[in-house]
Amino acid sequence: MAIDFDALEREMIAWRRDLHAHPEFGFEEKRTSAFVAAKLREFGLDEVAEGVGGTGVVGTLKRGGGNRAIALRADMDALRITEQGGQEYSSRNPGTMHACGHDGHTAMLLGAAKLLAENSGFDGTVRFVFQPAEEWGKGALAMLADGLMERFPFNEIYGLHNMPGLPVGHFQTCPGPIMSAEDNFEIVLKGVGGHASRPHWGNEVLVAACATVMNLQSIVSRRLSPTDIGVVSVTELITDGTRNVLPGLARIFGDARSFRPEVSAEIEKQMRVIAEGTALTYNVAAEVTYTREFVPLLNDAVLVEEAFSAARTVFKPDHISTAGEPVTASEDFARFLEHAPGCFVFVGNGEASAPLHNSSYDFNDAGLLCGARFHAAIIRQRLRSV
Image (cartoon, one colour):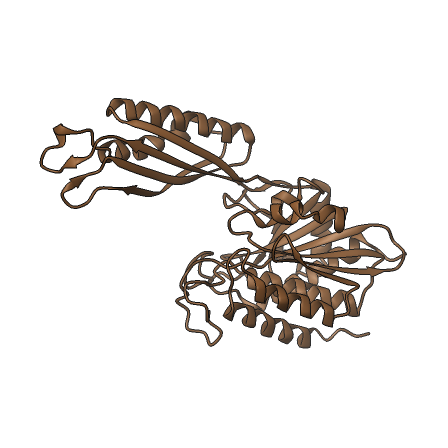
């Protein structure tokens, strides 16, 4: 049957804009999940399971007698950001918006499901994994804890993310590390606050906190090997002081990025040394809490070549490239790769696109068809009909 790509693209644009207008935060994606499940049933999938990992959806499509299964994954959640765009489909949920393009990722995977349901061309099983709560790194773990691998087993998994700055119709990936781990930290400094006119009567913590923030900058520049990639960012400094009150409590929050467990461990070690040493200098106490939220995303080298091969059937040859350097943002798609080999890729969202997590960001609808076709192409390549 001939494929009407123009009609499919129009449908995907309508789906994407509907999802964009109704964003939902992680584990709150009830409307989104219902929308996805209804579409998958409309396409005639063999099985549609809802509530996987809370609000996740898994659709299953089988063709032929092949015993291999491939998973395709899209994330569904939005962010706690107030949208500044003026589109007619702008967020109708105040304080929440699709500022990372998960509405587009979901529409792409729905488009692939429709393509493969109507024009299969493969032999085996496809798992369409629509994941909640990617933004705070809990959704993949929730689906895995809910028996994803046991209930819906698969041999390989593929995912994608839009990339602002990369032209629409362009494709990138690379073997090995492509996105970083993310660690979170909180440093609490405790002293004795008091009147702003008499700092010598107590042990206020604000100067110690400022010194700690500055000293943390030496971890990457002076305490890690220059050949290792690491980022340490302080994102918040909160005290209990006010205009004429010196604080007795300060809390420093931030995150760290790396690509190897050894680097993550060294960042934590040096952070504790710096926090405790700086606190001692200012005669206050320090407590450090350090957690690991995302693991590094490591692409399987063999499946990267398969992804490039599938991309050549969708993208122009000169629009396909190897990602030049790893991205220090994080993705909980990496959690699935602890259970099955896979590949994560980037598709262009346009050179004029606002950055991800920006209040003016919008997914570029011109990239929808490329994403859907890539998903379908990798399935037809890895589950070839005999």
